[in-house]
Image (cartoon, rainbow, N blue to C red; front, side):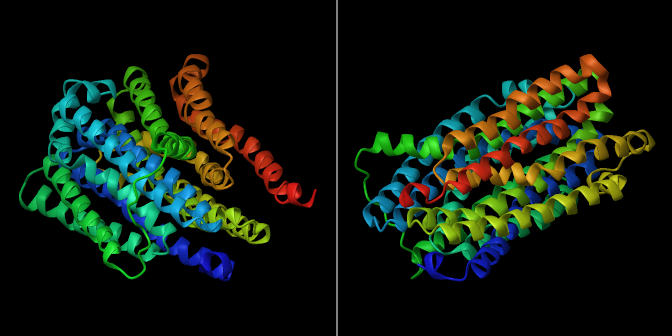
Length: 443
């Protein structure tokens, strides 16, 4: 019960360290894959990885849907001293993610070509994208269970093991990519194979939590299972939609770029997808480290501890915002060198594209953290508003409208404008809900 009694600052930064390590290594899966494939196949390989990116958004978002939704309710019940309820929420989340895993497995396994075509693949890119997905298709459920278990391990007081699980798979993926892609000369197929094996290693490490004395996760068939599944889906929907929306936006960007700007611009966007994923993972770490502390103290009505956690989380979000914006502005072509063996045409267009899009990183961590904050306060409507507004309504409209109104290059302004508009609403909502904590009790 340290989450209810321990020093908030120490707790938060302990959890942040573990969550940040997990988030960075998670993002390395895609980063290393794209870098290796880009070096092996050139801009065509990087463009193929941009086409595959929405598939990852689907897989990860479904795991987060059950994991974050279930773990928020699990910790809230724990803060209220309801041990049976917390076990039932874990069990319901496990059953829910099992169903989602089977459905997503069948869809990706049987419909990979139509999906990749929908996501922007043309006749040249489709064979490359399919080759990458071939080994990944066999282990799709593993990725969902990894996301779900990581959330519950953090809420069960074992953030270090959650980080170790991701770290072990990520380290294998780094070395496996090089070995399979270059040493064995497998190309893009080898990158997919390394990622698939790395995910299995991560799951095996995470499962050791159930052999640990720290483990309090027990399966208990839930009473009123449909109602509990509904509560999990409602609570976790905003986090789920963040990743789904990224897939939708990637598809919109891919189509707009291919129709207006060409393959070179799409290759640069492939770099943006990976850098943005890393920034987004940093934002996840800010929210994921705060969520267990927020949820359990919300359940226990410990408002001062909740406000302290919010303060540290906002400082962490500000740090990541400034760091990533500074990096993308200082060395845009440095990112190009990491991700592909590019020619002069790519180096000529990349700086303006990366710097313009990179302005969105100033407010992205705040906006994503806010969804975790609102979820922890059991304000799913506010979290839903933020995730849908930034992930589809405003951003999607701007991606389609700006090129028509201001020219093709204006598409890169869509996300900076979106994050700015959403951040205004986020600040107002955080002030409103934080200020209202405890007032009903006093009244």
